[in-house]
Image (cartoon, rainbow, N blue to C red; front, side):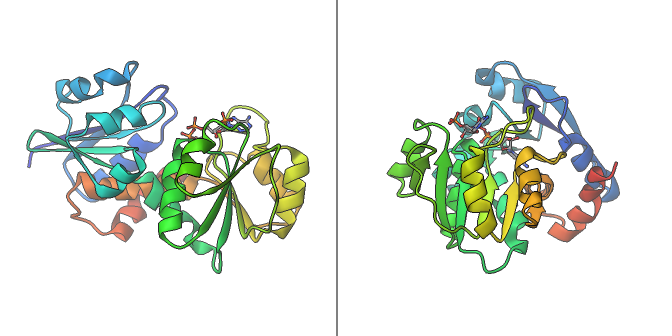
Length: 265
Ligand code: NDP
């Protein structure tokens, strides 16, 4: 095998940890690959850019996951079901699409035992794939979103959905921030009065945002709840993508041992 080139496509993309994660694993596992970052401005150009750069595989981040889905020749059944692709691998000139965010998230929350009822704060793209995998695994997922629009799809798919205005709180084992509230601001993902009502009854609170303690996790900690940010989700989606990139030549734990060093560098 001669060297293979991989990249992350997004806009912005300068903050991404993916190049470091994948390059640490390529190097330690002696796989002849190199992973770069590419700021893609026009999502419609994803496929032509992929081939023009001579890539073997990519990860796709905001705002191009829907374009990535459309660019694929072959879709993994789960990616097809949720309509979102964050990993593409080229095989004999065809683009194969996968969703590794959702299984990465599922693995990240697996440390919380005896969890059945989960409340998602937010109903965006990430909530779409993760709610589906959780339901497939037997969790009972309710969605609470700021506005009505994005809830429609979830409602059609049989999820219990609420806006802040019509929310009828129950007891949830896990409360999860699936919004971008707190990413670049100090916003809570829902009005504090609602959070003050639901956090005390939860076993733990989880955020998909990583690398900082969001106002949501701060509030959860003030209630003495165990908290978890989005770092493990990021790590696990990366490991699963690496398995696809390398044709499953390495075990999950082998990859993890090297990739996780990206979080202390
Ligand atoms: P989308 O743009 O698809 O959806 C954003 C969601 O956040 C919507 O439900 C929106 O509500 C809600 N929202 C945004 N701002 C606020 C606010 N101030 N108050 C309340 N709700 C708000 O985003 P994604 O689903 O793609 O991403 C969501 C988060 O997931 C991001 O923070 C992203 O960084 C993170 N993420 C983390 C990953 C990881 O590996 N750890 C992987 C992928 C994503 P409305 O419908 O009302 O606009």
